[in-house]
Image (cartoon, rainbow, N blue to C red):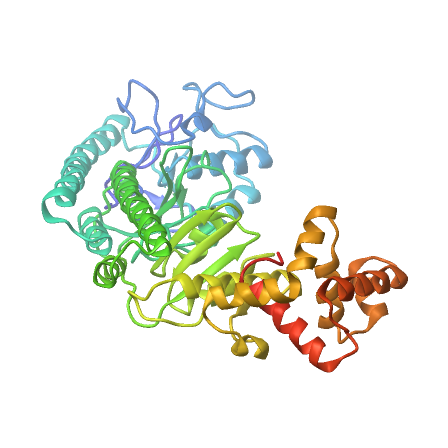
Length: 494
C-alpha cells in the first residue's frame, strides 16, 4: 500500500497520509499491506468489516469528539484505544493538528512502538474532502486488485478437479496469486496437510474467535466438521501486493476442501487396508493378489505383523499417519502390518504393549506371523515392556512353527492344569509361570502375585500333581518351561 492509500478516519482523525503530514515522534513508520480502515459512516461509505470490528464501537463514556469515535483522555484508555485499532486491522492513526483533543500519554506511544503502529499528524489546512477523495481512490484501486485475487483463488477449485494438483503445488500457486506465504498446522502445531510447512506456534491464537491480524499478516482457523481442523497463517511476501483478509479467508476455504479430500482418501485406503489384512489373516488371498494389494499401500520389502494392546485406533493412526501400514481391530487387539520401523513409533505410545513377529516378505501366509506376534504381545503385557519382538526370548527359538505340534506339547504337559484352572477359576498355570520367570524364588514370585508364600507353595504342589512332574527335577522343569512357552505362543496364557 502506498502512502496515499487509506488509513484511519476516526473522529476528525483521518486515515490517510497527504503531502505535508508527518509521523508523530516516537511512533513507527507506515506499514505496507494492511488495507482495512474504520471511519464515520456516511463519510467514507462502506467499510471492510473485520473480526472484532465491534471493538471500535462509538459512544464510549469519556470519549472526546462528535462522531462517537475519539481519543480517550486517560493513559489506560488511550493505550486500549490504540490496541483495539490494531486488533481490528487498522493501518495507522492520523491526528489533525490544532484540534481540541486530549494530550497523548507515554503509555499511548509505548503501545504504538510495541505494536509497530504508525501515528501521523495531518495539518489542519488539509480539507476533509481531500482526505475522503484520497481514501475513495485508494479503495477503488485496492478493490480491483482484491477482486482479481479473489477470483483467481476461486479458480483453485478448478485446479483441484481438472489438474489433480498435489497439495504443495496448489499452495504455491495460491501464494503467488495472493501475495502471501502460507503455513498450515493443527491446533497443536503439527502438520495439517502433507508438504505444507507449519508456522511458529507462538503466533497461534488461544481461541478461534481471536482477532485475525498478526504482525505482517493474518491467522485464520481452517473450518472442518466438528470444529476447526487447525490454523492457516499468511505472511505478506516481500515485494508482492497482498490480497487482504478476504483473499486469505478464501485460501483457508480451499485448504479446508483439500483437507476434506485428503481425509476421505485416507479413510478409503484405511478401510481397504483393514479388509486386505482381514483376508490375509484368513489366508483367502493367493500370494500374487496379496502382493498387489500391499503394493497399493506402498508396503514392499521386509514386513512384520504387530499385535498392539492398551491403546486406541485414533492413537495408532496419529503415530503411524506418515508411514505405510494396514490396521485391523479385533476386540482389544489391533493388528498392524508394515515395515519393521513401525515398532519405533508404536513403542512411543503411552502405556502400550506390542508384540512383533519376525520379518517376512509380502505375500507370505500370516498364520505363523500371527502366532509370533500374539506370543510377543503376551510377553510385553507380562513384563511391562512397550514392545517385545518374537525371538527376543532365547527359549522361543526352540519351539516349532507348527501350531499342531505346539498344541500337542501343551496338551501333553499342561492339559490337566488348564482344565483345572478353567473349572475352578484358579491360577495354577500363572503361578507356576511367575515362579519360573523369577528363577524359582518363592518369596519374590509370591510378592508379584500378591499372595502369601505358603499359598504359592501349595499351588506349586498342586501344579506338580496335575502335570505329574516333579518341579525339583531339571528334566521335568525344562519340559514344563517349554510347554508354558508353547502355551504363550498359542495365546493360552493371557
